[in-house]
Amino acid sequence: MASAVYFQLKQGHDFSLAALYGGAITLITTLMSAWRITVATRLSIGATKQDAVPGVAEFYKTALFRLILTIALLAIGLVGLKLQPMALIIGFIAGTLGHFVVPIHPHRA
Image (cartoon, rainbow, N blue to C red; front, top):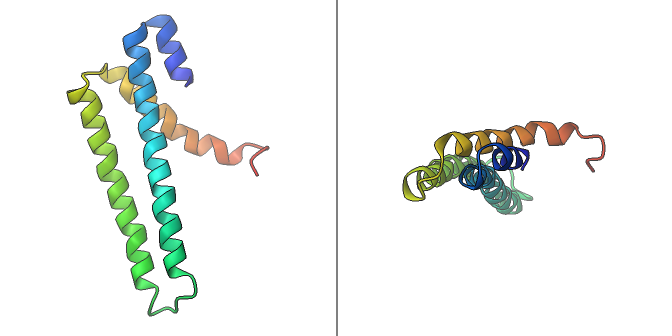
């Protein structure tokens, strides 16, 4: 969000939208991963070591799907929507770095 505000003030509307889209990619893939991991966790509750293999496979499938979804959304933004590449990537990086900042926040429950 901060990168979008910066681009709005310095570069204009096109750059701001690209930064917002880049940050949205991080949000979308995170929400998708959380949903898939929740499903995998529910499947593996009460499983023995021998039965845990399908649950572990779901975690790996989730990571692979997140990577593919990230690449696809970046390609859509760059090629399909023709957004500003620099702003899109900076927005994506800023959103990704947010994952490292939020867990150490003192008010996190």
